[in-house]
Image 1 (cartoon, helix red, strand yellow):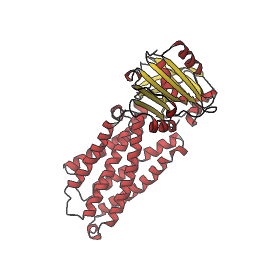
Image 2: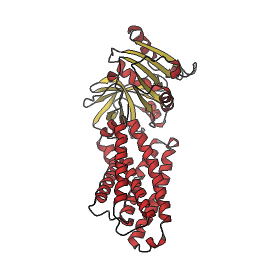
Image 3: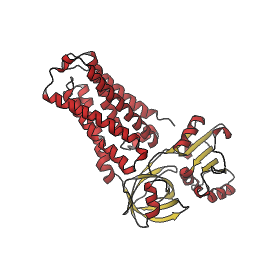
Image 4: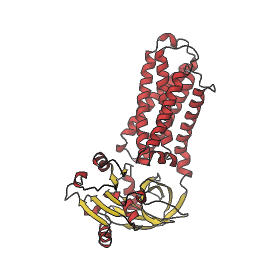
Length: 410
């Protein structure tokens, strides 16, 4: 499904920012290069505002971008854009004729110095954020938190070294005040309130079932009902000594009301901690649900493609006993990773509208769209690792396709 609402939102904000800076009247006439530098710098601040806003996991933004995965994609894209704009702004400032800089006060010079510090801070932190695959999840989160420091420096730089009076209630002044305030509040929200206050579903672990040497199913009993749609996921915090308390995402595999089941595979530092140490009765907190898989809105004919733990959302829907024609292709690496294989085969034998094809990639070639016969009016649902999603997105029909990739660090 399209993320056009979210894209239009970004374009509206960025274009509005460019126009406001371009048509704003400076306090005194300035060189065209300085005008361009201010427009680019203003766009950088606006882009950073959007970076922080998209990091809040707002349910409205998730709907506009049609999924949290897409929100994070544009969050990353805007971070890259922000860094590029900051670098261009810095280079343009060096090209401004010297006579425009002779009337600077000590306050202007201090603001300029903070701007340079902000530029170096953004370069270091954003570059580190993009090599986050080599870092532990908690370190990755702290890098994102530190971005607030150069952002605050950049705001001070914008207000007190600019040739435009941003403290006046002009269109540009109001726009800048709103975006910088919301940007800072979004960053502070993720730093403090989100972790401590916005996990409304409290509960405990009521059952643990280890399905293989590295996969287990955990039942959560919550204090109040969590309404979810099969195919969605949640963020889970586990309060147990020895297990990282930062929230991590997991697909909902079943349950109802106050009992919710999730599956996890011990592939990263966090999930290995949980697999080895988790105990019954441990307190938990949940935020969600998230995700936009909606099997009920799909066509009567559906094609499901699952890779590894990507089988989880499909299992959740099968437990509702759907009355649709479904062909499932389930790819896994080795028999130990084929969770619920027997359940799927038994379900296929008992339901003539459901078929399952098992693909063990240690014995067979990986699944390709070219090998599939896809009838017209077929809804395609794909869930699995990022590499698999990338392959199928480039080759599958563009219509009636929904996908969910695993790109969070676990």
